[in-house]
Length: 230
Image 1 (cartoon, rainbow, N blue to C red):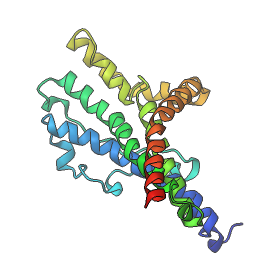
Image 2 (image 1 turned 180 degrees about the vertical axis):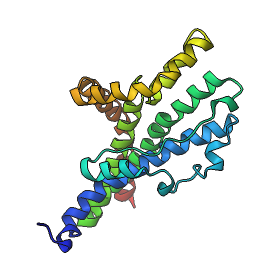
Image 3 (image 1 turned 45 degrees about the vertical axis):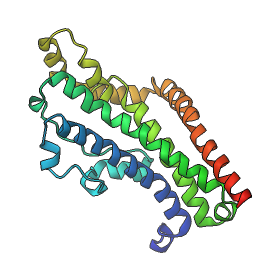
């Protein structure tokens, strides 16, 4: 049995923090983006419930947080949306849904820039703490991209399904699809359990992350030049 002192020893704590902190950062931005766009489109639900905040505690789901600790992947409390408050419910719901993945891609860009800058300082990366911070920065960027790609899968309740449903030819068809959204979770769990989409999701994530990583390379080049000429 692991003793309490061992649980909070350096290696275990660093590993747990290295998994959980990036996820907390990414899901906080993701859910905040949903609520912010909904608010701008006329729905005050998220604002009135205190969800327009960068405080991760407001977005944590207890079971999702536990899954983060156990598996390294979890989820947040979905931001409530009243699509009836939108002038155009289908368009408003689609934009609100797409805001989450878009925010994760937008977040990855400055985080990768910071990563490139940190790697330009060998003295920093050479320390245990410096390596932890640098690696966690890279992990945050990767998790952010992975979260964006995963959420674009067009299976309810993921964001991609809400964007796809907006293409329904009629309001009647749209609301019928939304009515059966709750059953999508069963399909999503089955797809994840069988690993049907693991390969494609990993490939898209790797390709997109590889493209965005050029930001880190550019940052490292800029700061490297500054250090050599400084």
